[in-house]
Length: 317
Image (tube, rainbow, N blue to C red; front, side, top):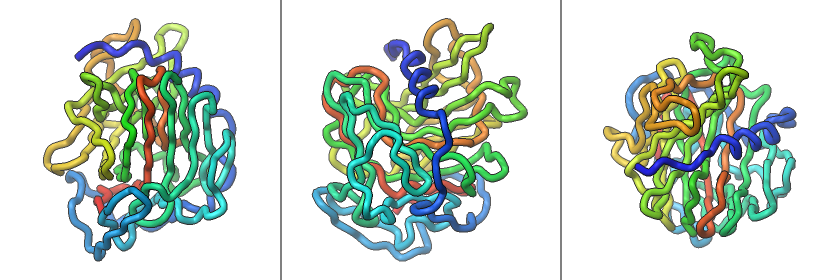
């Protein structure tokens, strides 16, 4: 695989700007339920809830669970924000605070493509710009109670047009490096991302670790063979275990992860060894949306719906 060009400066500058201040409020859209129990198996492929199909806007048909939040400790369907449309930088609603670069990026809640309801998060990034929009949630939410280090999740994602850049992200979790690691006191980040291969976006993980006076910022990657499809809904399931440094992403066969990271990735940017361990975070903050750290080669539009996070695998609709 070709070595990606440096990501660290763009990511670090954005992190410092976007992570200042607490997200206001924790009500509105984040439904909370009791998790249905711990398990170490792969993602669940069936659900006991009855399923329905819904066709909304031009998004096509997607089978949706009667309750997309079943078993989750944090869930977002975007259905509770009927008064929210176009989003502005620093706008707050429910548990979220928006971060938006309007120099090439836009973000809203709309009904163009949805799954379980009539609203989804929509981000657009224009050609030739490094920009985007993301929603940040942190603070006093049940998701972060007790400092979790091993969680599962699922989201529905629709991409069209499917433009590429050196690196863009769609979900992340960050916080202080977990307490058993040697990097306590440094902010660690696990990112679900896209890296291009032959002009096509692929599912990938990216890892970040705050730099010190003696050790530079760690900016490492792991790229899959799995292409990100265009103009169809994809159920993206994931598992992140900061203690064992194990990350998984599934977009199809539950017995075969689309992306699998164990301890180290495929390489790192700059003066950082490629076999540097991916010391993961205590979950203190999550972010959701599309952000490119390098100029886009073509436009990118991403819709995300039905994010669910819990202590057990979150089933696909």
